[in-house]
View 1 (cartoon, rainbow, N blue to C red):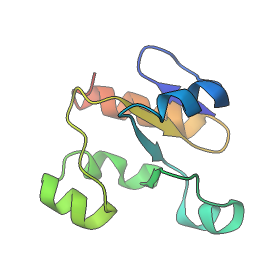
View 2 (cartoon, rainbow, N blue to C red):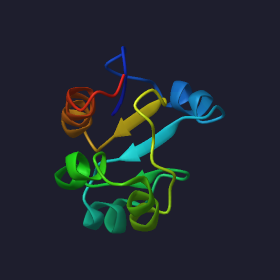
View 3 (cartoon, rainbow, N blue to C red):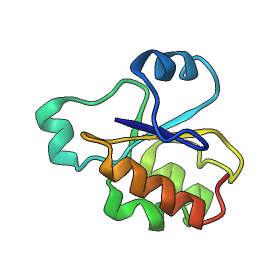
Length: 100
């Protein structure tokens, strides 16, 4: 299940279309879930428990840790998880940190 700012959920096709643009896709599942169920192509894995800390990192540290440019507070970001609960929490965390 997917969450995007302003819209609580996206369809798979909407995500595919969004990924053609400059959107950062953050998968907030645990690492064992990726091992078990597979990684989503062109997504960065930041488990929900790490997300608040990750979004407050120094950009250089973020890039070293996640091999991805750190999003600015106005960059488009999509969160995903297995069922939708964690991605909604991730969206709330990001918005509480000033992400639009």
